Image (cartoon, rainbow, N blue to C red; front, side, top):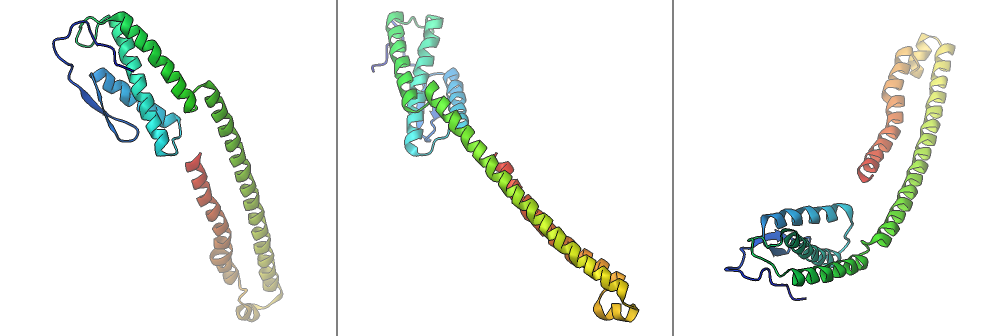
Length: 213
């Protein structure tokens, strides 16, 4: 579509400024207000939507360009003049704005950014989130079972050591390695580290969960 004349009379072309699109492409804009609008709109789209490939990013750049024109012409109509305070041809600008807004709606529909697309995306996101929670709950249950099994094994070993200690004299305890000191060392150097290994592995996995939430 042809860009409408910015004004009915203009002594010189407005100086342009440069902004960067989602793909890294440079685009010219006409004023600082457009630079601020572009950066905010681009960053908002990138934060709220997931773009999986370069084609999606190119579509986003097309959308930003179209929305920028809509912003510009809406701004001019509100001012009844362009950025240089030149009088605009209001009927031409109004018609171009309506056509551009129609084009934006079609492009957003193509990109899944209309209401239907947002609802479908939110539904899918909710389903994915619940599935992930279910998977993590299962992993936590497995972790607890592993902890309980290890605790029972270690307790039975400790019970055996204490039983041997109670049924033997000092010499036999020293030979069998079941003196009170030996048992304390076993708890410190074997039982506790083996149990903590299970917890540490699960805690490391939990950190990955938190980063992915």
